[in-house]
Amino acid sequence: MNGRDLESRLTASLPELRGRLKAEAPLKDFTWFRAGGPAEVLYAPADAADLAYFLKMTPAGIPVTVIGLGSNLLVRDGGIEGVVIRLGRGFGEIAIEDGHRLRVGAAVPDVKVARAAAEAGIAGLSFYRGIPGCVGGALRMNGGAHGRETKEVLVEARAVDRHGNTHVLPVADLRYVYRNCGAPEDFIFTEALFQGGPGDPAKILAEMDDIAAYREQVQPIKSRTGGSTFKNPPGHKAWQLIDGAGCRGLSVGDAKVSEMHCNFLINEGNATGADLEKLGETVRARVKETSGVELEWEIKRLGVAA
Image 1 (cartoon, helix red, strand yellow):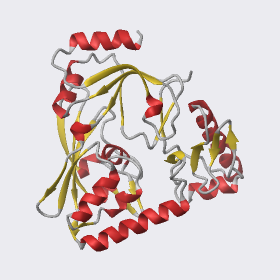
Image 2: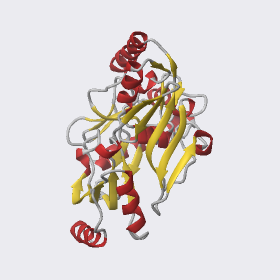
Image 3: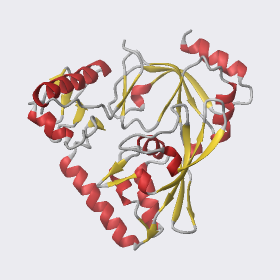
Image 4: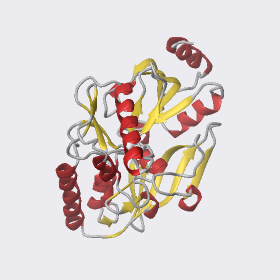
């Protein structure tokens, strides 16, 4: 089945759908690497109710994949089969609640979480200024930076499963560990409730400025990159292992290991998904050979090879 056939089939079987379907949509437009193939069909839900309707009515045999801002994502050149869901405006609300709490939609960029909290005088969420993604990704990966993690500030998350059922999950039920969440893989996060404390807006904003300045100084944030490529193994820093293996500046095609921070891969021009993945696997092999440590990908790799 090609993308246009699948789009037509879905349109016919989902008469009450309010979100947008687009066949053969280029995903490189949505990834920070600017590489990779298309989605067979891209679906942008209107809101959580529209998403639940889609999931309930779409046959289980049609693969469903969710993506966020694409900051931590490598799409292979053959693209992603089935339906790719990308949450947008209908998941972008931010609401301040009593008790120094912040309720936000899953499509809200992490930096906006930090800024909204600061402006409301809510301390404890400024670390989100250092995470280049959105709330949905932070929930799925226990996103963290500067010594703090999502699990420390999350009260509960709301999600929709593959059958269209809605779940409200207290943080304990998510069974968070380093860069991983224990929620079922088919759960699509739609909303988060964060807990902070009282703080002075000016001091919080100053802390955020420090975080931003640090990132610009030590990370290639102005390049086409996917952020940290590999998780830090227990007792090690991934970048030190990569540097020790002689991989700083290593390249495959237009894919290159950043010389500024060698746990970042960058697309210097027309790197393909295959170039980036081959480079990452080469780095893993060299680190294994030189240190005996097996690096684990932090970047999510999705789709099929061309």
